[in-house]
Length: 274
Length: 262
Image (cartoon, rainbow over all chains, first blue to last red; front, top):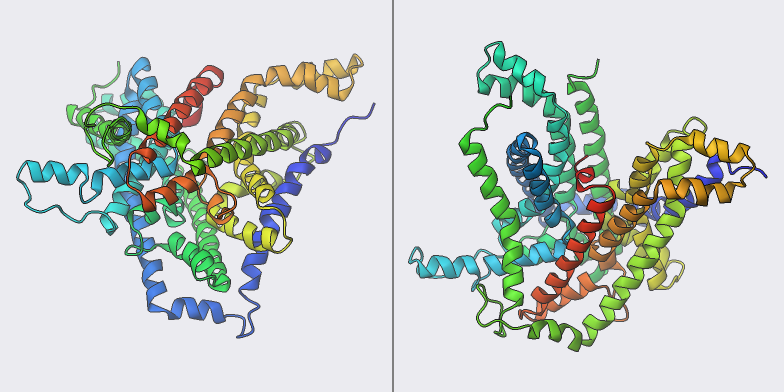
């Protein structure tokens, strides 16, 4: 009996990806270049509109802030986890995985309860007398940022724990026994070795924030529109599919460009690679 | 000896975990409240909002739809993902390098774009049934998880065992079921469960492929939240968290949760 070849085994999955992902996505992007008003008309329209430029700029800003905060929180937490004793390490990893496996709707909803006009935070602040009137916290850029940081910190922690764990304990000990202060050990040994992991985490969080939908929809609404919510609105509310496809194309190009550039940077900065 | 961690670092980590777990505890608390609006701490304990889930037809319907889609798409992803992962590991040299990249494309391409593209260029263009398009969309979404988890468990598999079975005359399919599959069993279970939970939680693909006729649970939750601010959403959230705990228990038993940190 003949054995299956590699191609035979891989072909159904290849077919699924090509037919339901590559072709539809490429077709979506190609149609934006074939409008009757000239090949670049949708893009001139997109970048010509002040409102859409604002949305793009806000999305970049929010993603950048979220990535920066997640990097700091994730790195410190992952460092502590990686140096924790075995049993504690398992508990902490479980505590980080649980939110990650809980859906984005549930996790954004939690912040809706906390930040609402009659939410927990407002009730607390009013009852302690810190503020007289409930603050408007929902539907602001701040609420979107907080909820997104909440969304992505577990991902950052789990990405970095693996990287930090792989730094040999000997190396850290060697550095301190050679006279390096903890801060010097941190900046000259640990940080450089963690750079590839930090880049992977940053790419995941940045692209995730840049293309998110549920969180900006629930916590930002119409007031804090981002690329994802704008795309949904164009596609399903105003039914302007050319505009929606244009946003889709901008998202794809942006995401792939970031991934390609950052993986190249990561390779160059990796001190372990010769 | 391990260097002592600075107390400030430990304090910071404690705060981070309060930040991570606190909001979920708040959701659980609000679900148990006896009031008609969302409050925390709960006022009067009651399970009536859990009963209320099943009194709303839209929730009953979407829970069933979400389960159907999750089962079907995970099944399809396993059916085609296991052979693909096997091929990638066993025939690495014969297959082109871009093939592995192709299987991670569903993670690389923004989900929203995939959802919109499926609506525009598959569902509308070829008039395919929405349910079927959703199933294929979700299969794509979970395929990378399946390929990755199965590849990881194949990495420790000794292919010479399989060689031995074949040279002793076992037909390929029998070799697969009696030699290979039992060896990667824990990987298959973990892949199934991770794919299942990913499909159940998906918003970005489903949002474009649902409408008045068909919807999934997360989309119904979003719709419900825009109209009502009662504890029903909190109680559905608790059900989903219970599911998550179950998933984690199974992953821990099979692969170990530390796998997720690699």
